[in-house]
Length: 380
Length: 244
View 1 (cartoon, each protein chain N blue to C red):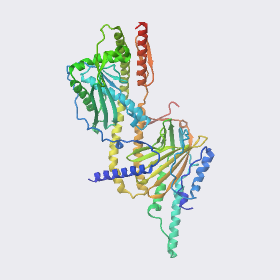
View 2 (view 1 turned 135 degrees about the vertical axis):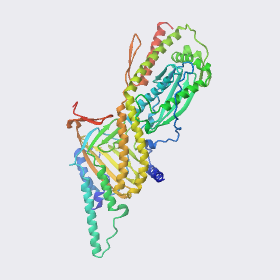
View 3 (view 1 turned 30 degrees about the vertical axis):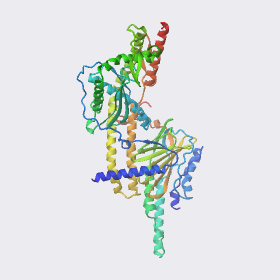
View 4 (view 1 turned 120 degrees about the vertical axis):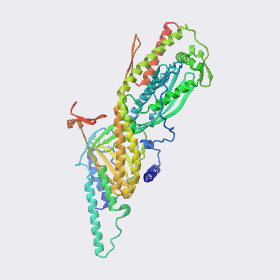
């Protein structure tokens, strides 16, 4: 009872302080950033996923290939450079973890992590990190197939307790969340008619072809409903242009698989550090909770305006900020180096530099050039 | 010298100040304060004329104000006031209203002690990019300002808030904490780029005046100490003589 009163008194104090501060900030509208888990609005978060086992029993299902796009790090909500860098790394790690979970389920064909959405795969999973600390992971997941059918659009959240730390090597404390996503993707697929899923690989190939050469392949597709594509007709099996496009498509797979190897390497290097990071942020969130109780008691312990009272206020703020900044230093340790990607196509080796997005874009531009050259050479 | 000498108004540095002028200004600030103590003027965030504060800085005690000296002066003033009141009572005169409540001596001394605590920073490392200025202070938290955004840039937490931004050639920080405790820092670099002035004003909701402390920091080379420290994940801060 006492702690509840203390907490509410503390909250009132904090709210009052913030309101009076804002009132004093008249004039130009300031750029406001919120930090610290306690300042994050949790209103829109769903309930934490329950303990969830991954459905691994073979479903006798067509082996559809999936692409997991690197998560949107949503860095606009992040306050400083190191955390932006961390989020970007995290966006790759989480996509990679989801890929591993989907692969482990044994219910799919190849599951790849993609630098950006691409018609190269029949089904694309996109995610956005809404919140991530060692206690809560909240991600919005969107799954869409090549026809434009939305399989899944849902926000997932998992909250973990102290007992999950330290995380054993090679595991994630948030496995229930990834299992829940994988199970829901499977359930969504099972809810579709078999004929629809069976058409997806070909639909994906045609979308890829139409993307590369719309004048030749655009007519193979039709809009069956707003935003929905269907196969209008099929190219001849001996169509040399379609065969050439498939070769280009395989080259794009080569790039994606090369990047995938880099992801594996990155995960091996960063997973232990990332686990430390999660544990540290968990401890910080717990610290903030206990602070609320202490803040309530603080009001009672020293007369306002006395050195002791001011010292308590300042010391608390200082320790909170020091702890936040220790985490910043930890985040800096992640770095955000972007490795060059070297793609060996057999007759040529390409070195791509810059961010992964730009590398992917560059590679697709190179492929389009190769395709145009081939078309020119053959008079196509 | 009265209370007003010790509770100084904020005095900004002038543009293009040389290091000598900076030092002189720092020295005369307490004297200027005698002209009338008042609350710091609200910050106006004049058009930015950013300076590059990057580097390592150590406090130059010979050029900095000593809070203890100021505090001793407050205490002497308290003692004089108490003696004056005692004499008035002895002589059968009214001693006049005592310092109490909002501006009690205890509160004023408390504010001075806070200023001493807050400004007890010996080493400062400033990392500055186009995006932010990060002022790392030993044994305290870093002051961080996102300088891409127009001032004031406000960072709010449940425990307090910070406002910052360029105010002309000065970088201004305000930390607003519960119970009206407010800390303002103004950071200015001498034109010669070898001295940094950090002017700190501490005010409280319980005292109508604020307490100003001016510290001067001199640039130094951390590697001249013969070792280099770096933060590691597994061992914390590790210092080594290697690679120098």
